[in-house]
Image 1: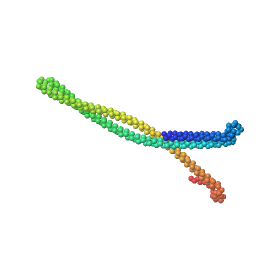
Image 2: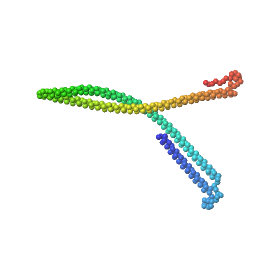
Image 3: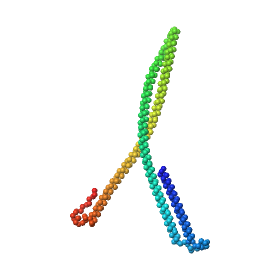
Image 4: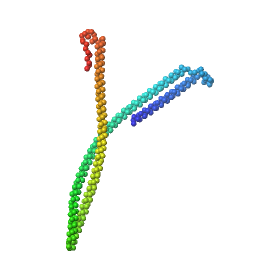
Amino acid sequence: VVSTQGCKRLQKEKEEMCASFEEAVTSLKGQHEEELVQLENRYRPRSQKLGSAPDSRVQPSPLLCVRLKSFYQREWDKVHQIYQEEADKCCTMMEEQVERLRKQQQAERDQQEAVQTQRMEALKLHYESCIRELKRSHEKDLDNLEKSLKQTETSLSNKILPLSTENEALHKKLKEEEENSKHMPTEKTLDSHVLYLEQELESLKAVLEIRNNQLHHKGNKLMEMDKLMEANIKLEESLKRVQQENEDYKARMDKYAALSKQLSSEQAVLQQSLQKESKVNKRLSMENEELLWKLQNCDLLLSPTSPFNSPRNSAAFPTAAPLSPR
């Protein structure tokens, strides 16, 4: 956005400068034409100014016209050169500003990428810790639910079994009492048995009502356990979804890691090539120094003023090849 605005501003300044130069050139052209008209009027004969017939023999000097044309041509060339220099300067300035804005944008992009990478790393760590925490919590809740479900089933089974046995025993006892009451011969015994049976029946009804309430309560508990199981299933689905998202994030991080590895390998290759070029440059520099040293020694040996070139010294000392500084 900043580079686009800077380019637009530079383009606008360039257009304004071009318009001002065009106006200046137009004004110079008008001034040039006015001066030409004035010169023609100045060298026009007096009789033609007074309205007499013009004399075709009196004309402006060709040398003057040539000088004027050359003068205005030089002025035009100067103005055009100034305009071209200003235009080139504006283009250079615009290119420099665009390059500076591009570098600034690249630096900001690199900084944002670094910040984004740090944020991704932080989010990844936070996400992994949250996933581990949720997984531990889910496993703990699941274990607790399974334990409570098993305990509830066991307790309900233990309670339902004696209740069923007691209910069957009461039904059998009631049938036996009814059969015994049928075989009683006297009204007194019948009344006593009827009273006893009514009492037993009332007690049995109370016991059955209590047992039914208990069974209803256990049924409610079982319904609650079903709801808990449904909630557990939903939690498992959410865990699967979160695990899938975690896999997606891992895939993206692997992709970023592969890209980073590729960039690192390219950087290593560039570093190796740079080291090779540095070694080659160093070797060439050393060879250049050695050649310069040899050249200097050769010049000293070949110079007539050198002490090693005198006959006496040449006879005293044998010639030997120059030693390398290395």
